[in-house]
Image (cartoon, rainbow, N blue to C red):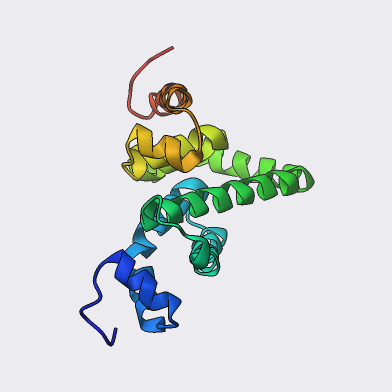
Length: 187
């Protein structure tokens, strides 16, 4: 960036509004890992996740004049990323009915392989991916991205009680999915 004195988000965003592309590049670099983590946790490591990550920053840029600063840029970006991820999940579900026989064959082939070929991190990621999107978004924000319950409620525009309830249900589902892999029996 040409002006190294610009360090705060507010200063970066003001510079971006004046057309400073170097400031926007700095802003994107500041948040790209966080947004990538959120999107990959929601969708898995796939080309669509990259598209959603890029679209998150494009949408933020286009709505920059409407950004009031009521929340931090990180929270606003995360909200965009979660919403776009949920849209992608809905799109996948619509397409899934068309491709269901092919997907069932693939899953059968995967089940035929030894589960030991997958490490714990991959198993956890797959378990998160298997959750219903409303639970997945809470797990990603609270347990993966580390947002507080209050911040998660703000991002998802839900009451805190709903966030806590969904988190508890999601954790129970994850425990049930992962316990055989961890040698536990929670039946």
